[in-house]
Image 1 (cartoon, helix red, strand yellow):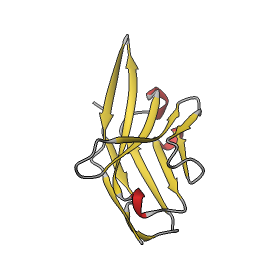
Image 2 (cartoon, helix red, strand yellow):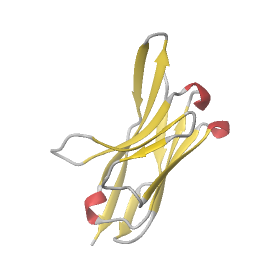
Image 3 (spheres, helix red, strand yellow):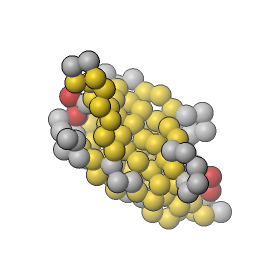
Image 4 (cartoon, rainbow, N blue to C red):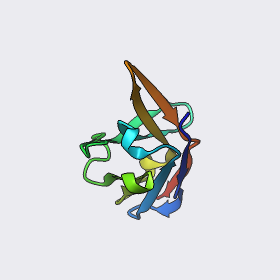
Amino acid sequence: QVQLVESGGGLVQAGGSLRLSCAASENMISINIMAWYRQVPGKQREFVARISNGGSTGYADSVKGRFTISRDNANNTVWLQMNSLKPEDTAVYYCKAKILRGSMWNDYWGQGTQVTVSS
C-alpha cells in the first residue's frame, strides 16, 4: 500500500501562484506514473497533469502553459507548480500514484488538498 500526502493548498487571488507537493511512502522510482487530479463538488474528478518515472509529462488543455508538474525521485516527492491561477481552478487537488505490479496496474490516491482562487 502506497501512502500519499498532499500539501500546499490554500487561498490565493486570481493571477497568483501556488505550489502543491505530494510525498509518497514508496520509492518514487518504482512508481510508473504520478499524476494530479482535481474535483469540485457535484462534478467528476478530472485529470490535471501527469509525469512518468522517465520524466515525460502531460497536461489537461485547461492548464497547459500555466501548470508544471515535476518529480524528485530522491525525495519521493512530486510537485505541481500552478501559475496564473483562475477562479475556475478552485477545487480539491488529489495526487495519484500508478504502479504496474506484474501485469496489473494499481492506483493509489492521497487525501486531497483544497485550492481556492478568489476573483
